[in-house]
Length: 113
Image (cartoon, rainbow, N blue to C red):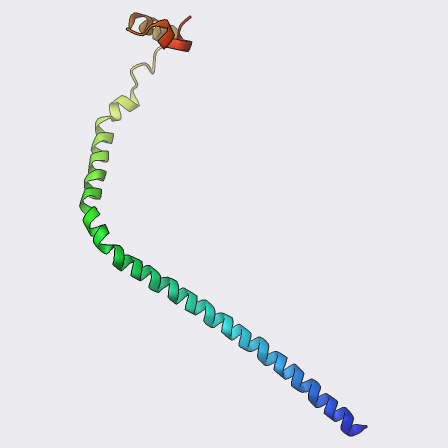
């Protein structure tokens, strides 16, 4: 019975050792897979940057001009936006202004009485 028990213990020890090795190698494989995925993403990003660099270089100057134009228009329209023409008027004054203007009652909609 002793040899049978020691054989069983040897088999059981082999199974436990194989399980531990399998778990550790799976963790190592998962780490390696994550590293390869990160490298692949970086390479794809670099490749995309290289392929689109001519496009970006071509549009850099118009992009700068667009920002300059928007900034200039924002600066020029600041007084209008900060002090609207009808901002301090009452509803009655606005209605009177619209009635004197070229708007008909149909066009005025909710402003007409």
